[in-house]
Image (tube, rainbow, N blue to C red):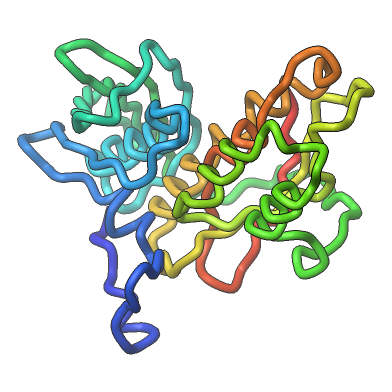
Length: 271
């Protein structure tokens, strides 16, 4: 997988203070090589739960796996298991095992380790690009464009102004203060005041807050892996929303996207 390209080469100018441009590529998904098939990952954003964001671990593990294969193969599938809670106070080591390298398919096993114990394991497969007579995909759902939806910041601000949500003020302010390197817009954001049961399904638009390059398909897949752990808990809790109090932080726990200016189409998230 190629090294991240400096966005200044593409867009010109330096990053202003506090700019999150390209942070997913230059920091979160830029692993430090320690030895052959051994890497160390850094933490950029830690959720208010003070546990490592699962999407970060998935994305970094896929980066480690991708560094052990040739440029002519692309991500095919990823199977992941979270074993233990991640500790945000120490880095994560990623150990890659080259399970098989075939002519068209390659398989890699990755173990994420902290304190000498695995916190996450995954198996990733890579495939050479090949033409196929069989192609299919799901149809784009009919939803409003992202320009018509509330941003994450506007949604939190709206919640902060709602007198019915006074008991959540501390948590909402903590969420508002976080610099998450992605931009998310829920199509139908649930509210804490909703007492009816809801279907365990959410759709949202998402993109990176900064430039992540265009040519490296593996990196785009790693960024997509970063989003994979977004909204699992919040979506699973929707049918039980009347019985359990789930703060908005469960809905806005992370994500990713593609290059600046491009939105990923709505992602139907089911529990």
